Image 1 (cartoon, rainbow, N blue to C red):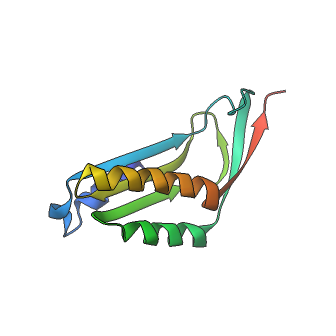
Image 2: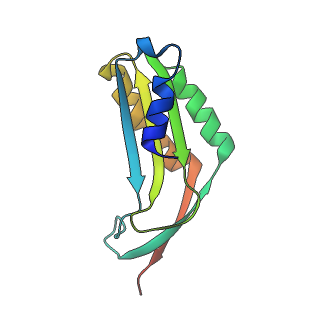
Image 3: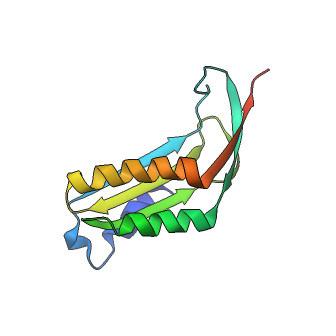
Length: 119
């Protein structure tokens, strides 16, 4: 799955004429942890039920037409994609807050990661 594929699927929706913008997030594995340690990779587990629940909730927000998410699980190396999110809606004042909240909730409630550090 790629962000472009997600955007294309949104553009192919029969109700796409309601969309005024699509905002996207592409999270990747970075080479350092938040506390500055060198990382060689990480493992990710995804709670698929929690994922579906959050996506359904975000789709109900005012002005939102679609919320598409792809989470990569298993071992990921530096530079690998981790999280793809696309939010389509009528205006940016509706779309940006939903994108931000979706990403934050996915990180806190859906994904569980273990970082592997350079020794």
